[in-house]
Length: 161
Image (cartoon, rainbow, N blue to C red):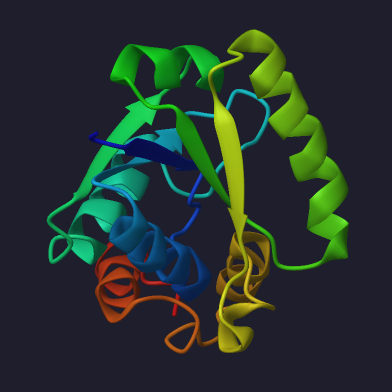
């Protein structure tokens, strides 16, 4: 039976922690859709098209990974794609309460949808997109926090490093 999972997020920008989850989830599922949220509630630093492009560049060596964007309910997006599993990353206890609420909300909208949680590797546990955005705003170095292709992309397009 073919298993399709979705790893949703804003990926603003893509981090080494995200890539850790993507690599590991892509080994578990036949197809992993990395779903980039348009996000009406957040004001991203990077436009949707750039976030998608960074993900495509970073995952080009992952044959089972597809990058798509969405601006609908995640439960509906999953159903449209034939996915029955959501993959979420948990860095700390502080992530758990939010993720638990979202998991229950998605299950109430689509009872066939399961959410699994993966912890990032220890070296990536502290990395978040918001930390990286803050570092970028202060013109700090992010090369150790994001995939090399993302660092190059940001350097070329943003001149903020």
